Length: 306
Image (cartoon, rainbow, N blue to C red; front, side, top):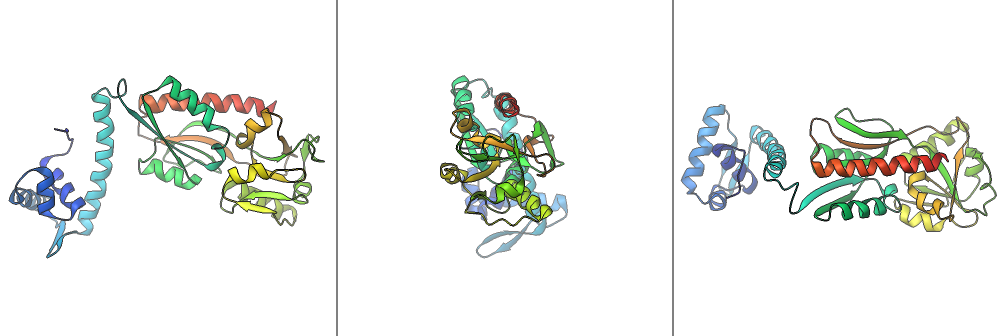
């Protein structure tokens, strides 16, 4: 039998809350329906509040019941991690690592890092969620992700930093581009080129739009997309792509693209952050993955400065 950290009344309540029926909960729990009803009634008496509305078609949670059910879902998730550690599943068998990241890391940065991590941890199951920065934090908060990697303008209060470094926007272009030999460029110069931009709402687009507005520069992008995997191959002779260095570091290393920084004071700043949820200890597997990501980010930062 699978162990549980919940008391019997709470387990019975959680089952009825999920299934909406005493009879279906009794079937799952392998007990009589009367036993489930007694436990629910005793729990409501002890709390002094109704947890369900009894209806002909089933059991409907009250507001108090909704709050208790939400708390138990969180407690069950935390308890499952504890039980996994107690059972020693961190040392043997299948282990799960869930990483939420923004799209800019998917094309070049993550694949080699995670491939090497898989070689070191062949029993690990990796789940990669490609989301927005706010969604990445939300997944940490609801415990559907263990780590979050994204560009951010500020650090969420309930998150723990594992890596935090400046991540300025760069202008990515072909070596044949007229601006490619420059040590730095200005926003107005880049805005005059056929621009490939991320959709509004991303940190890169937000910062570039802010820079254009601050300097009175009009910009009409040639292509806008939520997928950098679409934009990267479209950088041709005259096009410029606005992105973080990590987005195209593999292409820069191979000589396919050049990353030109903006002149000092031209572009607002942002941070590249690796986060976990504060107060929720990382599993050994998540800690190993965080270490691997931090090492790769620091190595990439050194190449970007060079």
